[in-house]
Image (cartoon, rainbow, N blue to C red; front, side, top):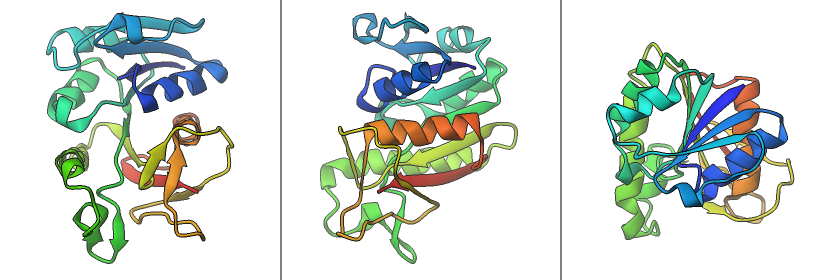
Length: 203
């Protein structure tokens, strides 16, 4: 496939680019600063501001799928959805957050007492993006939430998948590496199992 990754220079985006390339996909790597984008074989790098109304759809056109790895507070979800739609692409995968996952029935992670206050605006913006996606009937979207701690680590290929509940390991930790998250995301891209749905990945 030819896959556009918006936010390809970030922690999650760069690992997703690497995972896609390792599996033989073509990647259109997009970010604001060209010098931060990968230059490996199989990758075309383009500088773009994802909030530019006219530039983004033109760049995305011809791709088979789009992955958005942007911070929610730094982007406009409606514009991103409109850009994917305008480019004629149906498959859209979003790097989500853990804040909208349930830690108990009816209680979200971002409403927990120990949730960092400075992260809450980003988490709430992610919740708004997810709510907006759930209203789309013409996009094959998937929103993938990481676990509580989304960190640099190893690519093990060993992890669990869940739906709307935070995954917690036997030792009480809730985490996933950027590398294994990328594996789960590209697995979903290659073999869709959660179309028009959210799922989560963790150890």
